[in-house]
Length: 73
Image 1 (cartoon, one colour):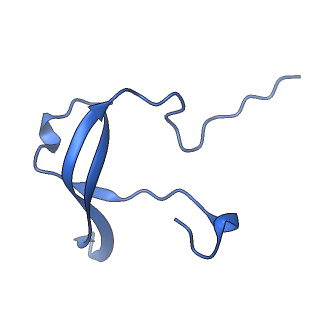
Image 2: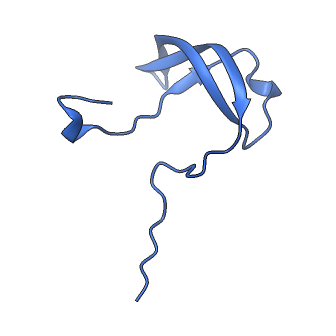
């Protein structure tokens, strides 16, 4: 998400909705297209993506938003 300029860009996670969600196995990676919508979660309105098109993909080479950094001495 960019709030002002590229200097303050950050990652953002959104809830998604798709009819076929239960067909996916745990740890399956997908690429998706969808429509931004608003839903109520735990009594609060939040943005969500209603998935309209998707396909399975290979796990990315760096799958984590914040990978653990290892320092060597």
